[in-house]
Each structure stands twice: as C-alpha cells, then as structure tokens.
Image (cartoon, rainbow, N blue to C red; front, side):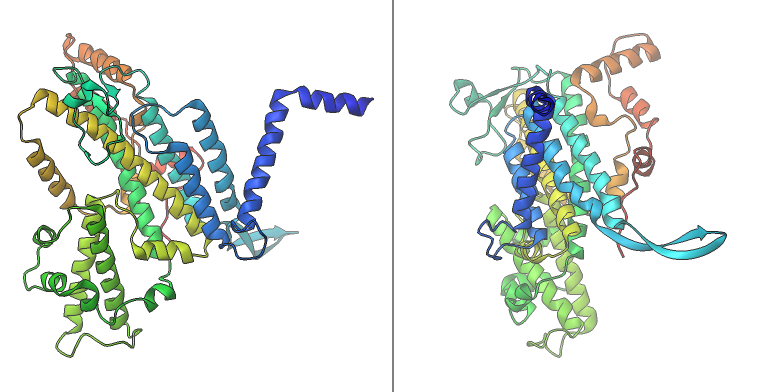
Length: 464
C-alpha cells in the first residue's frame, strides 16, 4: 500500500515528472553519442569527438535557426538551449590532466600527482558561457523596442524597405518610421552592435586558435598538389609573389563576388600554405619549388598567404568552413578540442547573424534618412576599413569584453532613462547625448580576468 501511494505521489508531482523526463532524454542523447551516431550498433559510427561536435551543431541549428528578426528567444527554446548545452558541456568535467601536488601525511610531506580539469577546457568553457549569455541578453533587449517593425516579403510596405542582403529573400524586412529612427534609438542600436561585435571577434579568434591546434589529417595531405603553384594557379601565384606585395591590391584583383569564389580562394591559399610549410621542414618528398627560390622567399610568400587568409576571415565572417577546417573537424579525436571548436563556432555564427540583423535595421534607417545617398560606396568603404585591421587574438579580444555591468544587457528604455538622468545631473537639462553615458560606463570597467574570477572561473589560457 505504501509503495503504491509513493508511486502515485511521484506520478502526480509535475516537478518530479519533468526531472524524470529530462533524465530519460539525457540517457537517450548520450546513448546515441556512445554509439557514434550508428544506431545499428555495428561499430560503423563516427568518433566520440565528432559525435559530440555534430550534436552541439545540430542543437544550435534546431534552437536558433536563421534568426530573421531582432527579438528574444521563446522561453521554451531558451530553456531547452540552456539545459541541453549544459548536458553536452558536462563531458568536459571529466577531461583531466595530471598535475603535481603536495600531501602531508603524519607530518611527512610527499609530492603526488592529482587530476584536475584540463587547462584549455578549464579556461575556455567559462569564457564561452559568458559570450553565450551576452548574446542571449542582447536578443532579450529587443523585447520592448517599438522604433522599428518587420514586414514580410509579400507585404506592400516591404517595397520601400530594401534589405542589405537581397539574395536572402526569405528574411523579414525591417521597416523604420518615414523619418528614420530617433537619435536615441539609433545610438542604442549602435551600442548593441558594438557589444555583439566584441562577442563575434572573441568567438572567431578562439575558434581559429582551436583549429590551429588540431593536427592536419594525412588524408588532407595526401590530396594536395605537388607544389604551391599548382594549388594556387598561375594568376594567383604571380599576384602573391610580386616584389611589392599589397594585400588590398591582391584582393581587388581577385573575384570575390560570391561565397563560392571566396571559399575557393581560401581553399587554394590554405593548401599552398600547408605545402610550403612541409617543404621548408623537409616533410614533403614531392616536387620542390626549384633551386632559384631561397628559404627567406619561401617564408615571405607563406606570410603573405597567411595575411590574406586572416583578412578574408575578418572581412567575410559568415563564409562556410574551408576544406582544411572541415577535414580537421572530421578527423579530430580530441573530445576537448571538439567541444571547444563547435561551441565557439556556433557562437560565432550566432553573433554574425545578430550583427547582420542589426545592420539591416541600420541600413533601412540610412535609406529613410538619405534615400538618394551613395550607401553602396559607404558600405564598401566600411568593408575595406574592417579588412585592413589586425586579426584579433583570442585572449586580447576576450579581455576587451570588460564592461562591469554587461553593456549588452541595456534595453532601449534603460538606455534612454540612464542617459537622461545623468545629463540632468551634469547640466540641468534634458538633452540626450551618448558621451556622458559612455564616459560613466567606461569608468566602471573591470578586466575580463577580474570578472571571470568573480564567477569562480579563470581567464582563457593558451595551451603550449
């Protein structure tokens, strides 16, 4: 009787039922991961590292989708994301390394080896979670804004609101008031854009660093041409080996009119870099460069190629992964690298999508305020300016995300109220400006290390 009553209480408790359902779902997910996505049990599945990488990628795709509007995630999707990404990341609790430690037993001090979470995982997982939270906060900030709306592609009003990305016809089109956004709303929107841009650069730099640490698979090396010139083609090779090399002039001479052509250029250059490095370290027995090319010249050409790759990645963050990156991910056997790479990649992709949606609204505002202006020329100028910058370092970019009160957590109402309040204190009037707000925010900055340590974590470290 007591047992039956206990079972009945269990079945009638909604909270216990939810916990039980989550446990069953978690067991099912990890069972599939253990099978390597081969449900037949025949041992033909992928490695554990690739299975986890695919699981994180598929989870993000199903939860976030395309992000066609600037709006908060639904509570159900947000709860699902938090719960299931924590399941995946729980694996990292058991990725450990041996470190020396001292133990005192009966007055005798001995040095022993103990285990702790691997240094790269221990440093980077808290950082990625922080970036994740900043992006969720940014989307939540658009909950109460009423300065712009969205219209479907079939709506008559969409004809007067052109998107920047005309090829993505399925996205909703932002619509601003006839006279454009108010000054406060535009400044707040630029504020959000800057916050998301910091997340984008940090995730991009971290992902690039992790991919660099992964070994180049033999299957990729076996498919390479015999030399760098064969990989690049005569035209690209001549442009990259000229006496006076300029990256901007090089890119102007290349056809970057489509995503496919950008990816093809990246694949060619990456292949040539791998070939040249192997030549210089005598790891490649294939046909060489020729007796007329010195080691200094080889290093110079390799540096030029790497510079172009960094500029391409910085200028076109939404471009699909190159053949080398895909090969590394598919052949990687390090579970820690797999989780860090996939998590940073989906955050990079998410930040890029949010940035694009913010830029769509800014573009619509520019059209409303200056319908006859030369926006295309300005857009190209901005793109060239971004491309000329130095590619971000992972640790440096993470340390730049140092706002004490999380700048991306400011809603439009908060932004307006904060600005007006401090302006009244400073000059006694209600003039709305951004300068005072920015100055006050900067005075409260903490370093990235200080903020992470308050959460019980550590700053990202670079594995040697």
